[in-house]
Image 1 (cartoon, rainbow, N blue to C red):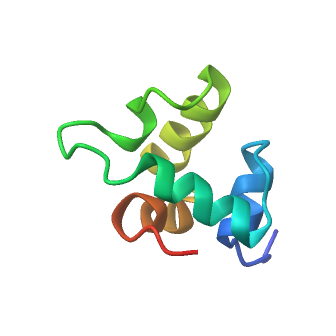
Image 2: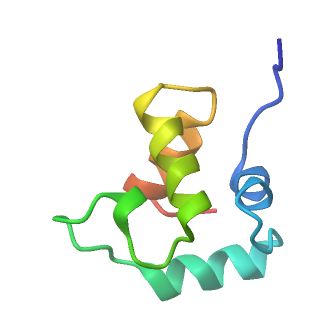
Amino acid sequence: MDTTAHTFATLFQQLGLPSDNQSIEDFIAAHTPLDSAIRLADAGFWSTGQAAFINEALSSDSDWAEIVDQLNVCPQP
C-alpha cells in the first residue's frame, strides 16, 4: 500500500508537468479561474492522458483525489 502523501509537486510530476513551486504557481495563474461550468478534467489545457488521469482520480476516489480536488477548489500550491 502506497502511503506517500500527494502534494501539488507530486501531482504535477504525475501529470508530466514542471513541478517546482514557480512553475506550479505560473500554471495556476495562467489557468484560473476556471469557468464553473467546466469540469477540471474537461479543461482545454490538459492533454488527453492528463485529463484521463484527473477524471479517473476523481471518479474512482483514488488516493490522488484529494490533491486533484484541491487543485480544482483551492488552487494554492
